[in-house]
Image 1: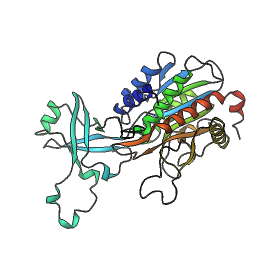
Image 2: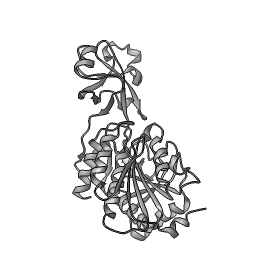
Image 3: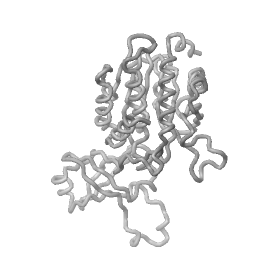
Image 4: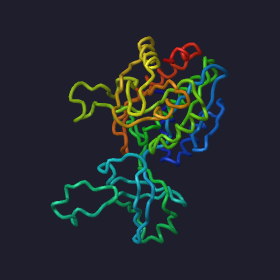
Length: 356
Protein backbone atom coordinates (compact mmCIF):
# COMPACT_ATOMS: atom_id res chain seq x y z
CA UNK A 1 0.00 0.00 0.00
CA UNK A 2 1.38 3.39 -1.00
CA UNK A 3 1.81 6.39 1.28
CA UNK A 4 -0.74 8.23 -0.86
CA UNK A 5 -3.34 5.53 -0.22
CA UNK A 6 -2.63 5.57 3.51
CA UNK A 7 -3.15 9.34 3.50
CA UNK A 8 -6.38 8.91 1.53
CA UNK A 9 -7.69 6.30 3.97
CA UNK A 10 -6.85 8.55 6.92
CA UNK A 11 -8.63 11.53 5.38
CA UNK A 12 -11.72 9.52 4.48
CA UNK A 13 -12.12 7.61 7.74
CA UNK A 14 -11.51 10.61 9.98
CA UNK A 15 -14.06 12.72 8.11
CA UNK A 16 -17.46 12.92 9.76
CA UNK A 17 -20.34 11.78 7.57
CA UNK A 18 -23.43 10.08 8.96
CA UNK A 19 -26.40 9.55 6.61
CA UNK A 20 -27.56 12.88 5.25
CA UNK A 21 -24.34 14.66 6.31
CA UNK A 22 -21.78 13.27 3.82
CA UNK A 23 -20.49 16.62 2.52
CA UNK A 24 -17.06 16.42 4.14
CA UNK A 25 -16.45 13.01 2.61
CA UNK A 26 -17.56 14.23 -0.81
CA UNK A 27 -15.09 17.12 -0.48
CA UNK A 28 -12.22 14.65 0.03
CA UNK A 29 -13.30 12.78 -3.11
CA UNK A 30 -13.52 15.96 -5.16
CA UNK A 31 -10.07 17.12 -4.03
CA UNK A 32 -8.64 13.85 -5.30
CA UNK A 33 -10.52 13.59 -8.60
CA UNK A 34 -11.73 17.05 -9.55
CA UNK A 35 -8.65 17.95 -11.62
CA UNK A 36 -9.21 15.22 -14.24
CA UNK A 37 -12.80 13.99 -13.84
CA UNK A 38 -16.08 15.72 -14.58
CA UNK A 39 -17.68 16.09 -11.16
CA UNK A 40 -21.38 16.45 -10.45
CA UNK A 41 -23.78 15.75 -7.60
CA UNK A 42 -27.32 14.48 -7.50
CA UNK A 43 -29.95 16.07 -5.30
CA UNK A 44 -29.28 13.70 -2.37
CA UNK A 45 -25.61 14.67 -2.36
CA UNK A 46 -24.05 11.66 -4.07
CA UNK A 47 -20.89 12.71 -5.91
CA UNK A 48 -20.46 11.46 -9.48
CA UNK A 49 -17.00 11.60 -11.10
CA UNK A 50 -16.89 10.83 -14.85
CA UNK A 51 -13.73 9.68 -16.67
CA UNK A 52 -13.39 8.40 -20.22
CA UNK A 53 -14.42 9.31 -23.75
CA UNK A 54 -16.59 6.52 -25.12
CA UNK A 55 -17.83 2.99 -24.56
CA UNK A 56 -20.17 1.35 -22.09
CA UNK A 57 -20.94 3.20 -18.90
CA UNK A 58 -19.37 1.50 -15.87
CA UNK A 59 -20.55 2.62 -12.44
CA UNK A 60 -18.17 2.23 -9.48
CA UNK A 61 -20.10 2.82 -6.27
CA UNK A 62 -18.97 3.16 -2.67
CA UNK A 63 -21.21 4.72 -0.04
CA UNK A 64 -19.88 7.74 1.82
CA UNK A 65 -22.09 7.57 4.90
CA UNK A 66 -21.08 5.88 8.13
CA UNK A 67 -23.29 4.61 10.91
CA UNK A 68 -23.74 7.18 13.65
CA UNK A 69 -26.39 8.96 15.65
CA UNK A 70 -28.53 12.08 15.72
CA UNK A 71 -29.51 14.25 18.67
CA UNK A 72 -33.14 13.48 19.48
CA UNK A 73 -33.71 15.45 22.68
CA UNK A 74 -31.87 17.66 25.16
CA UNK A 75 -32.95 17.08 28.75
CA UNK A 76 -33.40 19.80 31.35
CA UNK A 77 -30.11 18.69 32.88
CA UNK A 78 -28.23 19.16 29.60
CA UNK A 79 -27.90 15.49 28.65
CA UNK A 80 -28.48 14.34 25.09
CA UNK A 81 -30.86 11.57 24.10
CA UNK A 82 -29.98 10.22 20.69
CA UNK A 83 -31.28 8.17 17.78
CA UNK A 84 -29.21 5.60 15.82
CA UNK A 85 -28.51 6.17 12.13
CA UNK A 86 -27.75 2.68 10.86
CA UNK A 87 -27.52 -0.63 12.66
CA UNK A 88 -25.88 -0.58 16.09
CA UNK A 89 -25.66 -3.32 18.72
CA UNK A 90 -26.20 -1.66 22.12
CA UNK A 91 -23.19 -3.36 23.70
CA UNK A 92 -20.75 -1.49 21.43
CA UNK A 93 -22.26 1.94 22.14
CA UNK A 94 -22.13 2.35 25.91
CA UNK A 95 -19.12 4.22 27.38
CA UNK A 96 -17.84 5.34 23.97
CA UNK A 97 -16.61 8.87 23.40
CA UNK A 98 -18.66 10.76 20.80
CA UNK A 99 -18.39 14.01 18.88
CA UNK A 100 -21.57 16.01 18.46
CA UNK A 101 -21.41 18.22 15.37
CA UNK A 102 -23.15 21.21 16.89
CA UNK A 103 -24.07 24.51 15.29
CA UNK A 104 -21.03 26.20 16.86
CA UNK A 105 -18.57 23.38 16.21
CA UNK A 106 -17.77 19.91 17.55
CA UNK A 107 -18.62 19.06 21.17
CA UNK A 108 -17.07 16.07 22.94
CA UNK A 109 -19.15 13.76 25.12
CA UNK A 110 -19.40 10.21 26.41
CA UNK A 111 -22.27 7.72 26.17
CA UNK A 112 -23.52 6.82 29.66
CA UNK A 113 -26.42 5.19 31.49
CA UNK A 114 -27.72 4.81 35.02
CA UNK A 115 -24.80 4.00 37.40
CA UNK A 116 -24.57 0.27 38.18
CA UNK A 117 -24.72 1.05 41.90
CA UNK A 118 -28.28 2.26 41.39
CA UNK A 119 -29.41 -0.70 39.31
CA UNK A 120 -31.14 -3.54 41.19
CA UNK A 121 -28.87 -6.57 41.51
CA UNK A 122 -31.17 -8.79 39.46
CA UNK A 123 -30.99 -6.39 36.51
CA UNK A 124 -27.27 -5.58 36.38
CA UNK A 125 -26.54 -8.22 33.75
CA UNK A 126 -29.35 -7.09 31.47
CA UNK A 127 -28.52 -5.34 28.20
CA UNK A 128 -28.89 -1.57 28.35
CA UNK A 129 -30.93 -0.38 25.37
CA UNK A 130 -29.91 2.67 23.33
CA UNK A 131 -33.12 4.37 24.47
CA UNK A 132 -31.87 4.16 28.07
CA UNK A 133 -28.52 5.73 27.22
CA UNK A 134 -27.60 9.40 27.02
CA UNK A 135 -24.57 11.47 26.09
CA UNK A 136 -22.94 13.56 28.81
CA UNK A 137 -21.32 16.63 27.24
CA UNK A 138 -20.54 18.34 30.53
CA UNK A 139 -23.34 20.88 30.27
CA UNK A 140 -24.79 22.28 33.48
CA UNK A 141 -28.30 22.45 31.98
CA UNK A 142 -30.30 22.52 28.75
CA UNK A 143 -29.67 26.22 28.21
CA UNK A 144 -25.88 25.79 28.27
CA UNK A 145 -26.07 22.81 25.90
CA UNK A 146 -28.27 24.76 23.51
CA UNK A 147 -27.21 28.39 23.77
CA UNK A 148 -23.53 28.09 24.69
CA UNK A 149 -22.54 24.83 23.03
CA UNK A 150 -24.86 25.29 20.05
CA UNK A 151 -26.47 21.84 20.10
CA UNK A 152 -29.98 21.19 18.88
CA UNK A 153 -32.10 18.20 17.86
CA UNK A 154 -31.07 16.90 14.44
CA UNK A 155 -27.33 17.43 14.95
CA UNK A 156 -25.20 14.45 13.86
CA UNK A 157 -23.04 12.40 16.23
CA UNK A 158 -20.01 10.23 15.38
CA UNK A 159 -17.60 8.11 17.46
CA UNK A 160 -14.20 9.50 18.38
CA UNK A 161 -11.63 7.53 16.39
CA UNK A 162 -8.30 8.08 14.67
CA UNK A 163 -6.88 6.17 11.72
CA UNK A 164 -4.14 3.99 13.24
CA UNK A 165 -1.85 1.31 11.81
CA UNK A 166 -1.48 -1.39 14.48
CA UNK A 167 1.66 -3.16 15.75
CA UNK A 168 1.64 -5.15 12.52
CA UNK A 169 1.34 -2.10 10.22
CA UNK A 170 -0.59 -4.02 7.58
CA UNK A 171 -3.54 -4.09 10.00
CA UNK A 172 -5.29 -0.72 9.88
CA UNK A 173 -7.79 0.44 12.51
CA UNK A 174 -10.29 3.26 12.04
CA UNK A 175 -13.96 4.12 12.20
CA UNK A 176 -16.22 4.18 9.16
CA UNK A 177 -14.49 1.49 7.09
CA UNK A 178 -18.08 0.71 6.10
CA UNK A 179 -17.85 2.12 3.57
CA UNK A 180 -14.95 4.55 3.31
CA UNK A 181 -12.85 1.62 2.11
CA UNK A 182 -15.20 1.40 -0.88
CA UNK A 183 -14.97 5.15 -1.46
CA UNK A 184 -11.17 4.91 -1.35
CA UNK A 185 -11.24 2.12 -3.93
CA UNK A 186 -13.37 4.31 -6.21
CA UNK A 187 -10.82 7.13 -5.87
CA UNK A 188 -7.74 4.95 -6.30
CA UNK A 189 -9.22 3.11 -9.30
CA UNK A 190 -9.87 6.40 -11.08
CA UNK A 191 -6.41 7.67 -10.16
CA UNK A 192 -4.98 4.52 -11.74
CA UNK A 193 -6.78 5.43 -14.98
CA UNK A 194 -5.63 9.05 -14.98
CA UNK A 195 -3.97 9.91 -18.28
CA UNK A 196 -4.71 6.46 -19.70
CA UNK A 197 -7.24 5.17 -22.16
CA UNK A 198 -9.80 2.54 -21.25
CA UNK A 199 -12.62 0.98 -23.29
CA UNK A 200 -15.47 2.54 -21.34
CA UNK A 201 -16.69 5.60 -19.51
CA UNK A 202 -16.21 5.16 -15.76
CA UNK A 203 -18.52 6.89 -13.30
CA UNK A 204 -16.97 6.85 -9.84
CA UNK A 205 -19.83 7.47 -7.42
CA UNK A 206 -19.78 8.18 -3.71
CA UNK A 207 -23.35 7.45 -2.71
CA UNK A 208 -25.28 8.82 0.26
CA UNK A 209 -27.62 7.35 2.87
CA UNK A 210 -26.83 3.69 2.22
CA UNK A 211 -27.05 2.81 5.90
CA UNK A 212 -30.65 4.00 6.14
CA UNK A 213 -32.06 2.42 3.00
CA UNK A 214 -29.71 2.54 -0.05
CA UNK A 215 -31.21 5.91 -0.92
CA UNK A 216 -28.26 7.55 -2.69
CA UNK A 217 -27.78 4.49 -4.87
CA UNK A 218 -31.34 4.83 -6.10
CA UNK A 219 -30.93 8.46 -7.18
CA UNK A 220 -27.36 8.24 -8.50
CA UNK A 221 -28.03 5.20 -10.67
CA UNK A 222 -30.81 7.19 -12.29
CA UNK A 223 -28.35 10.01 -12.97
CA UNK A 224 -25.72 7.68 -14.46
CA UNK A 225 -27.84 5.06 -16.25
CA UNK A 226 -24.98 2.51 -16.23
CA UNK A 227 -24.52 -0.52 -18.46
CA UNK A 228 -22.68 -2.41 -15.70
CA UNK A 229 -21.87 -1.72 -12.05
CA UNK A 230 -19.21 -2.68 -9.54
CA UNK A 231 -20.19 -1.97 -5.93
CA UNK A 232 -17.19 -1.63 -3.63
CA UNK A 233 -17.79 -2.59 -0.02
CA UNK A 234 -16.57 -4.18 3.17
CA UNK A 235 -16.93 -7.93 3.66
CA UNK A 236 -17.65 -9.83 6.87
CA UNK A 237 -14.72 -12.07 7.88
CA UNK A 238 -15.18 -15.33 9.76
CA UNK A 239 -11.68 -15.38 11.25
CA UNK A 240 -12.60 -14.20 14.76
CA UNK A 241 -13.42 -16.27 17.86
CA UNK A 242 -16.93 -17.67 17.97
CA UNK A 243 -17.61 -17.27 14.24
CA UNK A 244 -15.53 -19.63 12.13
CA UNK A 245 -15.89 -23.06 13.73
CA UNK A 246 -14.37 -24.58 10.61
CA UNK A 247 -11.73 -22.95 8.42
CA UNK A 248 -12.66 -19.30 7.82
CA UNK A 249 -14.21 -18.70 4.42
CA UNK A 250 -13.27 -15.01 4.47
CA UNK A 251 -10.29 -13.78 6.45
CA UNK A 252 -8.09 -10.73 6.74
CA UNK A 253 -5.07 -11.12 4.47
CA UNK A 254 -6.91 -13.58 2.22
CA UNK A 255 -7.33 -11.24 -0.75
CA UNK A 256 -10.14 -9.43 -2.52
CA UNK A 257 -13.67 -10.68 -1.79
CA UNK A 258 -15.97 -11.44 -4.71
CA UNK A 259 -19.53 -11.69 -3.43
CA UNK A 260 -21.44 -14.71 -4.71
CA UNK A 261 -24.52 -13.67 -2.73
CA UNK A 262 -25.68 -10.79 -0.59
CA UNK A 263 -29.03 -10.06 0.93
CA UNK A 264 -30.20 -7.41 -1.53
CA UNK A 265 -28.79 -8.66 -4.84
CA UNK A 266 -27.70 -11.87 -6.52
CA UNK A 267 -24.72 -10.97 -8.71
CA UNK A 268 -24.73 -11.20 -12.47
CA UNK A 269 -23.26 -14.67 -12.96
CA UNK A 270 -21.17 -13.82 -16.00
CA UNK A 271 -19.75 -10.71 -14.33
CA UNK A 272 -19.02 -12.78 -11.22
CA UNK A 273 -17.20 -15.37 -13.30
CA UNK A 274 -15.30 -12.65 -15.17
CA UNK A 275 -14.04 -11.31 -11.84
CA UNK A 276 -13.00 -14.74 -10.57
CA UNK A 277 -11.31 -15.53 -13.90
CA UNK A 278 -9.51 -12.19 -13.82
CA UNK A 279 -8.15 -13.01 -10.38
CA UNK A 280 -6.84 -16.32 -11.69
CA UNK A 281 -5.25 -14.73 -14.77
CA UNK A 282 -3.72 -11.80 -12.90
CA UNK A 283 -2.74 -13.91 -9.86
CA UNK A 284 -4.81 -11.70 -7.56
CA UNK A 285 -5.61 -13.36 -4.20
CA UNK A 286 -9.36 -13.88 -4.11
CA UNK A 287 -11.95 -15.22 -1.69
CA UNK A 288 -15.67 -15.70 -2.16
CA UNK A 289 -18.10 -13.86 0.08
CA UNK A 290 -21.61 -14.89 1.12
CA UNK A 291 -23.77 -12.42 3.07
CA UNK A 292 -27.12 -14.03 3.94
CA UNK A 293 -28.64 -10.88 5.43
CA UNK A 294 -28.19 -7.17 5.04
CA UNK A 295 -27.55 -5.53 1.72
CA UNK A 296 -25.47 -3.12 -0.35
CA UNK A 297 -26.03 -0.40 -2.92
CA UNK A 298 -26.26 -3.20 -5.50
CA UNK A 299 -29.76 -3.77 -4.17
CA UNK A 300 -30.94 -0.57 -5.86
CA UNK A 301 -28.50 -0.44 -8.75
CA UNK A 302 -29.12 -3.88 -10.24
CA UNK A 303 -32.87 -3.32 -10.63
CA UNK A 304 -32.58 0.08 -12.34
CA UNK A 305 -34.49 0.45 -15.61
CA UNK A 306 -34.27 -2.88 -17.47
CA UNK A 307 -31.64 -4.20 -15.05
CA UNK A 308 -27.91 -3.49 -14.58
CA UNK A 309 -25.39 -6.37 -14.44
CA UNK A 310 -23.84 -5.82 -11.01
CA UNK A 311 -21.22 -7.33 -8.75
CA UNK A 312 -20.08 -6.50 -5.21
CA UNK A 313 -16.33 -6.58 -4.56
CA UNK A 314 -15.33 -6.35 -0.92
CA UNK A 315 -12.46 -5.88 1.49
CA UNK A 316 -12.64 -8.09 4.60
CA UNK A 317 -13.18 -5.85 7.63
CA UNK A 318 -13.48 -6.88 11.27
CA UNK A 319 -15.86 -5.18 13.71
CA UNK A 320 -17.91 -3.11 11.27
CA UNK A 321 -20.91 -1.29 12.74
CA UNK A 322 -18.81 -0.50 15.80
CA UNK A 323 -16.70 2.54 16.76
CA UNK A 324 -13.49 0.96 15.36
CA UNK A 325 -12.85 -1.68 12.71
CA UNK A 326 -9.77 -3.38 11.30
CA UNK A 327 -8.77 -4.31 7.76
CA UNK A 328 -5.63 -5.60 6.05
CA UNK A 329 -3.62 -3.49 3.61
CA UNK A 330 -2.92 -6.45 1.31
CA UNK A 331 -6.66 -7.07 0.87
CA UNK A 332 -7.14 -3.45 -0.17
CA UNK A 333 -4.35 -3.72 -2.72
CA UNK A 334 -5.84 -6.95 -4.10
CA UNK A 335 -9.31 -5.41 -4.39
CA UNK A 336 -7.90 -2.35 -6.15
CA UNK A 337 -5.93 -4.50 -8.59
CA UNK A 338 -9.07 -6.50 -9.39
CA UNK A 339 -11.21 -3.41 -9.96
CA UNK A 340 -8.65 -1.80 -12.29
CA UNK A 341 -8.20 -5.08 -14.20
CA UNK A 342 -11.97 -5.34 -14.69
CA UNK A 343 -12.19 -1.75 -15.91
CA UNK A 344 -9.63 -2.57 -18.59
CA UNK A 345 -11.69 -5.60 -19.68
CA UNK A 346 -15.19 -4.12 -19.73
CA UNK A 347 -15.35 -3.11 -23.38
CA UNK A 348 -18.48 -3.01 -25.52
CA UNK A 349 -18.30 -6.67 -26.51
CA UNK A 350 -17.67 -7.90 -22.97
CA UNK A 351 -20.45 -5.80 -21.46
CA UNK A 352 -22.87 -7.02 -24.14
CA UNK A 353 -21.96 -10.61 -23.25
CA UNK A 354 -23.14 -10.12 -19.66
CA UNK A 355 -26.79 -10.11 -20.67
CA UNK A 356 -28.63 -13.37 -19.91
